[in-house]
Length: 167
Image (tube, rainbow, N blue to C red):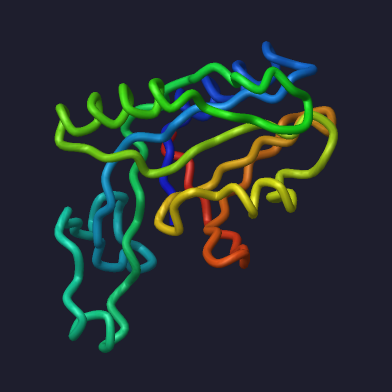
């Protein structure tokens, strides 16, 4: 699951709309946490979170999967300057990685826009996905309102994940 704040979502949408007709891109910085479930009737924040990874034993017992919390959205240039593909400069990736490390965070994934298709990874997106642990967030500008979806990509296979927006 990916958790993103409303203002960060608005930033991504504004960048996508402002960059149209070209694809835009950026990096998601934050932390993975394991959270205990929140039961119906509990107030928000009733669950507990930890930045530590669950042990193999916990995973076997059905512990909840890690939740990625986006702390920072970093817009980057699409050096491909294309309406069909995106590419982040290696130097920009390194700078964001150092920024994240300096704050005790990590790069959680990447986002980019699709200007005329749905928010689903294209064959090119799947083939070029650099890290199976990343979250691949796509924004579609195909319809009247931008649409955002997040995906996990591993070994050429895609799986959609839940996105929660914190208001």
